[in-house]
Every structure is written in structure tokens, then in C-alpha cells.
Image (cartoon, one colour):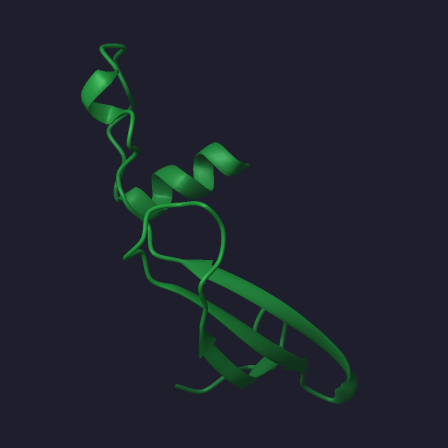
Length: 80
């Protein structure tokens, strides 16, 4: 895949690793990425990525919920 080197595509992944963290459900995949800004090797970021899973409260919630395209879309919308 080619990048146009324009935001948000102006970073490249230097390292990606599996990660264990938090008090969540064991078995959820979680990763951390070290990325570097293309054209400025002094600028780095860490990105934490976690597998999207259904809410643990779903079986107990009788309030109507929106129809989400995916669990990932649900999580991003709620976090925003």
C-alpha cells in the first residue's frame, strides 16, 4: 500500500509488539506501535490498539441501543 505522506498517513511503524495491560478480560488482543513522523525522525508516538469486543453489559441492558456497523465503530463513537 502506498502512502501519500500527508496527515494522517505521514507516519511509519518502527516497532509493533503484543502487550498485556489493564484489568480487562484476558484473551483480548492488545498491541502497541512505535511510529515515526516521515520527514522528521525526531517525532515519535506510541499507539495502543485493542481488539474490539461486545460490551460485557450487553446481556443485562434492556435499553434500546443503536445498530452499530461493528464493535470497533461502537467503541470509537462512545469514546468520542
